[in-house]
Length: 176
Image (cartoon, rainbow, N blue to C red; front, side, top):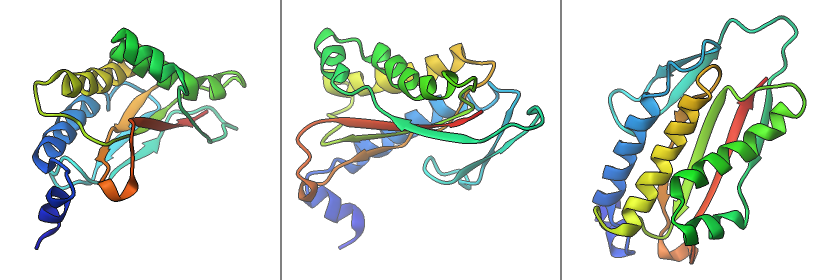
């Protein structure tokens, strides 16, 4: 039995996950040229999942590299109840970026992991909510176009072994 069949046996919709990841990759690639400070290298050999590296450039002397991880905590519940999925993306990036900007820095690179029990079937309200979240991340990266590049926006559908009962999202911003 191949890995895809094992995931399917555990309730993971592999095709929906692949389609979602491909969409997230498209949103992400649309932001690679936002920042004059970041040059993104796609090392994925044409696959929608894979390594994307980056090189920092044109930074002032004496800069530091910081990395911060954060999430929007319980505000996710409020955003979901209000149907503000695109706004939830803004909140997520703001939480990471604020840790950098409060000390005079700026977000240069954003990497996000969306961990859900199920993406839902394509076209369903649940699936569309996640699409809006990813597109919201792309929107925010464009709004921060002077600095931020979204390097990767992968997703992960959790298998039942992990007993995930809710959606979680975490992210990492790196820059100075």
